Each structure stands twice: as C-alpha cells, then as structure tokens.
Amino acid sequence: MRPIIQLFSFLLRISKDIPRSRATLAFVTFAGIVSGVASTAMIGVITASVARQRPVEELAWVFLALVILLPIFRFFSQVLLINLNQRSLRTLRVRLVRRILAAPLRHLEKTGPSRLLATMTQDVGTVVEALSGLPGLFMHLAIVVSALTYLGMVSLPVLFYITAFIVIGIVTYQLPIIKAMGYMQRSRQLFDNMTGYIRAAVEGTKELKMHRNRRDAFIGAFDQSVEEFQQQGKTGSVIFVAAASWGHVLFFVVIGLLVFVVPRFQPVPPDVLAQYTIILFFMMTPLEMLMNTLPMLGRAAVAVKAVEDLGFTLDNQVKERELPSGETVSPQWRSMELAGVCHSYHRENEEESFQLGPINLAFQPGEAVFLVGGNGSGKTTLAKLLLGLYAPESGEIRLNGQAITDENREWYREHFSAVFVDFFIFEKLLGIEASSLDDNARKYLRQLHLEQKVQVKGGELSTVELSQGQRKRLALLTAYLEDRPIYLFDEWAADQDPFFKEIFYLELLPELKQRGKTVFVISHDDRYYYVADRIIKLDYGKVVSDRSMADFLDSMTTENGSLRQSGAAGI
Image 1 (cartoon, rainbow, N blue to C red):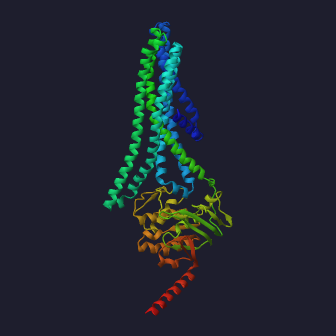
Image 2 (image 1 turned 120 degrees about the vertical axis):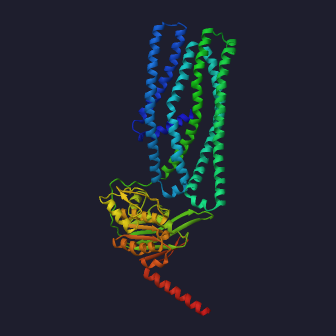
Image 3 (image 1 turned 180 degrees about the vertical axis):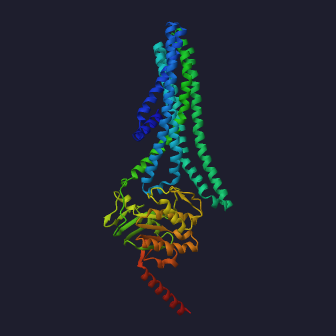
C-alpha cells in the first residue's frame, strides 16, 4: 500500500495546478470500487441462482443490471483517467521546467544536466504510467474486499481461518518486495549515470570518432554502466516475479488448507465449502493482477522520490522574485558598482576552493570594457556575477545605487543581453515583441553575412545547423534584436576567421557604442585591445589592473621599452 499512498500523496500535492483533477480522481476511484463490487455481486447472483436461493427471474434482472452497470463505469473511468494522465504529464513537466529555470544557475550546474534530463524523461513518464493502472488496481482490490465480505456472510468461522492464512501469506510476500524495492532504487540512481554517457555520446561524437582508443574506452565504460543499470533492474524484477510466483502458490495452499485441513477443526457444510472454493477461485485473477501491479508501483514510488527530491531541492533554492508580467526595464541607467563582491567554488583537481574577489569596480553607461586575463583567472565567473546569474557570497552589486538582492535580481538581469562561450540558439525568436521583427532580423542577417544561410519568417529561423562560427553570429542576431542597454560577449570572436573578427571589433562593437550601449567583452585578441575604452585584467580571481585604454597603452610601451633595454644590456 505504501507505493499507492506515495502516488496519491504526490498527485494531490500537484492537483491544485490541474483543473478538476481531484474530482476526476475521486470519481475514478469510486468507479473502480463499484466495478469490483459489481463483479463480486455477479458471482454472488450466479451462485445464488445455481443454489436456487431466490427466484431465477428476480436474479436475472439483477444480473442484467450489473452487466449494464459494469462496462459503463469502466468506460467512463478509463476515459477520465486518460485525460487526467495527459494533464498530469503536462503539468508535472511544466512545473519542473519552471522550477529549473527559477533555480540559481550555480545550483543547476552542481545538479548536472544528466539528472535533470533523467527526471524530466524517465521519472515523470513512470509516475504517469503508474497512475493509469490505479483504476484497475482499485477495481481488483474492491473485488478482493467484497469477496471476503461475501465469504464472511456465508461463514464467519471459516473466514477467520482463511484470513489468518492470507495474513501469513502477505507477510511472507512483503519481505522479498522490500528487497526488490532496494534494487529498483539503485537502478534508478544508475540511470542518471547512464544518461550522462548517452549525452556524452551525442555531444562528443566528433571527438570519439577521431580517437579509436578513446572510443573503445568510452564504449567499454558505457557498456559497464548499462550492465550495472540493467543488472540492478533485472534483479529487482526477478525478485518481484519470484514473489508473485510465491503468492500464486500461496493461493492454492489456502484452497488446500480450506478443503483438507479446516474441516478437521471446524465442521463445514458441503454447500459452504463449495461457495468458498468458487469465490476463492474467482479471487485468483484479481489477486494475481494486484501482485503484478506491485513492480509498476515500486518503480513509480522510486520515480516519485526522485522527482520529489529534485523538486524539493530546487524549491529550497528558489529565492528570487519573478519579474511581474508586463513590467519593463528602462534603457537608461546611471551607474553600476561591484562593492566587495566575492564568489568561491571548488575546482577539479584542487583541494582548496577558488575565490573570485573581493571585486571593487564601477561602470558608466556607454563604456566598452574588455575583461582580460589567463585561463582560469575568473573572467567568466565575473561575467556571471555581472549578469546576475550568480549571487555574490559577500559584498553587493548596485545599479543606480540600488542594491541587487533576490527581490530584484531578475529585474536587474533584464538590463543585459549576452552571448556566452557555451551559447544556445533557439529556433524561434522567443520573447521578442516587435511589429517589424522579421525585417530587423533580415537586416542583421545581411550585416552578419548569413542571409544566404538562414531565412526568418514569423519570428522563426529556417535553420540553426551551421558551423560554429556561423552559429555564434546567429547568437549575436538574437542579442541585437533584444536591444538591451548592456551587452556581454564571452570569447565571441574565438571561433571567427580574421575577416569576421575585424567586423566584430571594428564595426559591430563601435556600432553598439554609437547606439549608447555598454559593452563587456571577454577577449584574448590583444591586437584589438585599442578598441576598448577600458581594460580590466584578472589573475587568479583578483583584479590586478583597471586602466583606461590610454593608460594601458602607456604601460605596455613602458614595459616593452624596459624589456628592450634589459635585452640590449644583456647583449
């Protein structure tokens, strides 16, 4: 019963988001119980008719009414359940996506995409699949209960012995079921790992094709992951089957005890014995269906736990207030400050955590700011703090003198457009409202030399299957169309040929500045540093210099002169 309780508890918690779900669930449950009772009543009517306990004509009308009532209840309950399942599937997935998008980016990075994908695909489907079996479950449960009730009306002493045997059987049946649930739980945990390998196979196809030993090692590791996953699931399923077989044998044991043992201790009239035997055989199929349902419910219980664990974790992390619909962001801003901002996290192969900061910086509208430094210096982490994707662990960010907190962080993010180094392109230009959207998009496609590759119609791009450099230009298109006051580009030019690098630094960035935009650029292209108004250099999480372009060039000239002099002296 525990898996059933978990499923119902879970559904009831999300039912507030599903219209008419509670009424539907109540009716489906009622219909299943009525169907089970009606099935038992049919057997009772047939038994009474054979025994001539009541007039045949009267029993025939009762039998006819039951024949009509039973399929009607079953049909409507199944139709309602189909609708409920589809609405539940939609609501559950949308709800999880909302939680994921509302959760802090840092927490999602720790959770990992494999677990998120496994929950969205496997677990949600398993839960809804189990819900579809609930009407049948309640129907068979109602048959068993009503049959036992009928047997009690026939002979209470005999029912006492039968109930005692059934209780013993249930206890011995539950012990392996508990063991099987443990295997199912481990199988679900291994599914996350297997999903990670599948994702790696899809995203790392080129790298795997290029290196035979790597490919063979990957296939071996993937095969081991699949084997471990299947082994745990298979062991759990085998235990479920063994328990079901034991339950099947127990059923015949009960009948044998009724026929050969009970009469030795309790006188049983032949007609009572016959009715008990008929009803017990009638109960055989419902009991077998109940036992066959337990593996499905067991998997569903594991899936519910996985969904709830993820949802509970994300709920705990969601602190930010969503920006109310219709609330807009003014393109005008006066100042932005980072005051004592710090952020730390653990990096691979390092015992100590990496800390960025404390950072103390101030920015003005219309600046072109280059963030430079070696790999691992903290440029991307600083960018995520600037964008409001990471919350500072200490210190604060201020916009127009207003501190950015969980209450206004989403409002703050609405000031930025960004193209990340690990960018993603949506095929539709989502969330961009403009009467001339297609015309504006075509203008930028021409400017980015993509008009022969990509067309736009109704705010939808004809394709995103392009080279990496072209895809980055396409990502720039979306950023342009958003027309926000502040832009950030993370290594945008890294995948571009010299021609498009020059266009980016000498045409696109100056054009954004002319439109009054503030631009942050993470770059290693030192030959284009002169385009910046200001250069901020980071080294191992610290700002080691923050200079205007003129000061930066002077320092470079001085350093180069010192190097030349030291070189001459050495000669």
